[in-house]
Image (tube, rainbow, N blue to C red; front, side, top):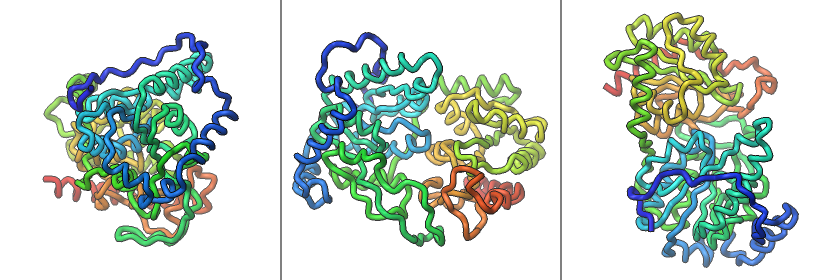
Length: 435
């Protein structure tokens, strides 16, 4: 049995060897799979599916599991949000093998965590690579067989899409937990934000019918809650502790040394104070302006800080524009993995981000940070328990949860009205508070 902190953390290999051997559970058409999932759902007593008062839920609190699979492949921020679940699972099942199904690019964020036994790699991006789709399909079926062979007895799907539900179902685990079906969105008021409009977009529950693959569903009493607290709703089902969430990210010493060398190669010595700006994010509506980031960069360069730009390859064009408008910044965009980004933020005095995975990494590391918000609700997905780190303008249309600028009828006012001076002032206050 693999124990937390002692287990082998090498990834379980996913190869593309021949998968034509007959394995009845794998060799299903999607139509047959839907039939099997429906049958499995029908065989679970209704009381077991309706709420934590049901017979099956009561027994879960005292049940013991020895082989556990946690499913949350991406994105970076969502992976960070799931770390507290891992920690509580290890505390509840100290002798269990606990694996995490995750994409290769995010695996290094959790691989060194002492609560984790193994990472199970799902190379999702291979499906979008030209000339690799057939190989990716072979690897996908090989992964399904591998999950089946692992004989997990508990699978927790925090992703809640049809593909992650397929992983859960194909595992054959006797207990498969995931979120319930979506609930209706309603007007909410929180201590930090009055949601005056009711967005039509955003998370409301499990998607794509994935909930029918679960033997037990996590009830959704409200949507006015942070994602980390929402993930921890699995706790009452399994009898997990109610200690404060532990979001600690464990980085390898090799990752930290690589980032130190990278900074030195770009003229940033180890004793120089550093500000990290991460101007990228996936939604185009969540991007603060290039002029805004450039203005912040110029101010901190003037104050004697080194300023580094970070992000993925898709962020390189924005970073180049910011670098051109703020001579002297160190552009590291496209040169770091998610784990190396975490090491870079760990090295910094402060990080400035959009609403993005880098924001959640900074919060998890306990670093001073400031994030600019517009179309999304910081109460739900902001830096956890750090409302002072959020800069936003109070507009009646915000948040809207629109992803594309073409959907916005107000010329992206929620982001354009945030000025560099507002952000610099907040950064200085946050840094002063940290000291």
